[in-house]
Image (cartoon, rainbow, N blue to C red):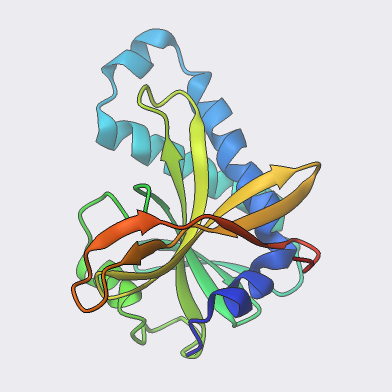
Length: 195
């Protein structure tokens, strides 16, 4: 299994822009709820509703796309892109960590372990969103790769003039401690593979 950031983001290139936009359309649908319903949702209900809308957006966008398979594997909603990467869709923090309590299967996914129904060699990625404080808009869309509880890398995805552009925002760590010391930000690629 190859967890190299450039290789993984290149594998995602054919779906990156549309998946980014699916998160934003899902939030628009969620925000169309009556204000009283939105006010009654706690964080869990809001995240669950947004996830359901995201899954519907992904199905509409990618159901007929060659090389892309949408999978439901024992409760996980996943996108397999060319048997190279498999993405799950989650609410994440600024470093790309899922903010929900993980199940054993989600922990296995994060450990890059074999899961029945998934291509063994495909790198497991989290394609996440970070909402604003009011849960009224998507602040950032992130793709991250974990090995257990350690984020190996994290990329922010942006729509720039109708093209997906990503930048590495992996937190730098104090060597040997795992302690985050700063976030590095640099442009590293785009949908068409240019730097």
